[in-house]
Image (cartoon, rainbow, N blue to C red; front, top):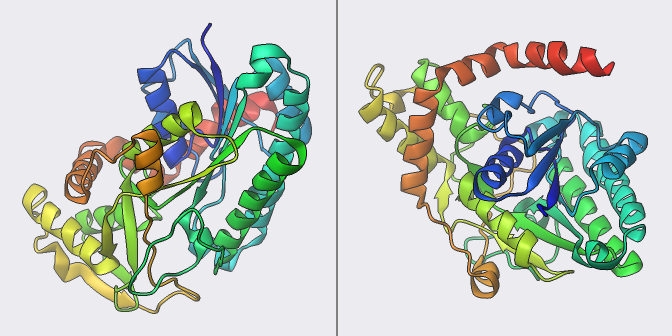
Length: 356
């Protein structure tokens, strides 16, 4: 019998990549649980929406009654918890949503999962998994050398990373206190198709194509490790299947780049593929750095490589080119996001129907 996988945040950037991959490459039934905030876009799931193995539930993970109903009705074999507020800048200007979704929402989901799991028996109970997906930002900021490992102490520096660190600790506590079968992953910066254009790479691509300034924080010397989203989705599915209960796995791309290097690489690709407006690097502009901007993130991904056999398939160069090509080829998706039309469609097709 096919497994039922409950994916929270399945209409988001990473979540939708996981859903698309699971529908395409497994026989699992996938239940997408998403509140459909501004960053949730069902158009990112158009390719799988007609599959008989795909289900959608518009549910806020903070709503204990609705979350319990979802568990009761769908009887999942595993949970992949990706639902989160994730934009650092938004967490600085409005931290309340991050506390509510990332901490209270994770607590609500853990309690629903614990109650459901306690009611299972036999192989169904023994096979259940709760996979919590988190970020490398919980570790704080690195100097010029060294890497984040699974043993690195937590030192979150933004409201976003503090809320994710809190959720990581809750998951750990529910495992050690109640025995809930959990695995946790912490990833580096993702990029790729269907990325909401508030993040660095899609913002720079779309601004450059439209002849708008390319805003770079400070000197552009902040360093991030970049991970192609489909590589991340493959790693998440592998951890769900083979990860050791109670363990944490760091997932990174071994691709350290300064923000300035990322922008310059995007401009070079666009000069080739979209020569109108070249040289696109002339659009670069430097803006005041954001408060508490971590200097460097870099993940040591050797544990997941050694224990589970995962390696990224894309280099930064191949992944970035695929990403730029995707945005140039998918103007309708981009236009819908930039205009907000996808939110009107959601309201008409889901919010009004469910009475939310």
